[in-house]
Length: 170
Image 1 (tube, helix red, strand yellow):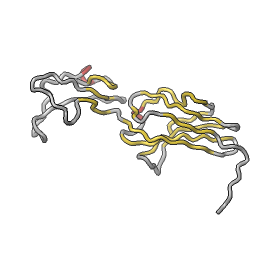
Image 2 (cartoon, rainbow, N blue to C red; image 1 turned 30 degrees about the horizontal axis):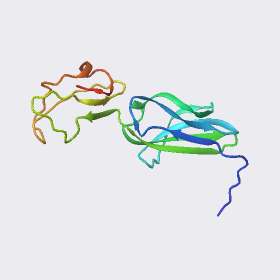
Image 3 (tube, one colour; image 1 turned 60 degrees about the horizontal axis):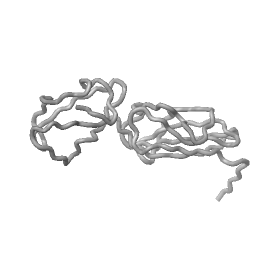
Image 4 (tube, rainbow, N blue to C red; image 1 turned 135 degrees about the vertical axis):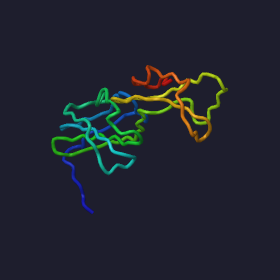
């Protein structure tokens, strides 16, 4: 076993994010320390990433504030991702904090899988479609495994050409 001796306290790294990310979001937390040099933000696939991608760097300390304003989440792959904040001091010491999140720029919020609606009733479809160049279409079919699909009777919000966040898709 080796002993480790620290000359100064480690930097302070605290990341505060919501579990579900969609659209443009602010990433908050703390990145500071007595010999603060910089911080960087990274993402990696899944709960235990082996590869990380840097997506932001700053040499300005932050105390309980916004680390990155207006992150457009379409730059991060859909699904389970881990965000990591690494704070470095002038001695090269690092401190890190992580948060596992779900990136859901494309999702149905309602109706859900087992929702029942009366035949002929108008059904509002709600959810997210966000990202550069993303458009969408909604089709329906009869039965559990439809043989054919149709857009008949479906009216898309803004013809499926504009982003929707937690709103009506059609």
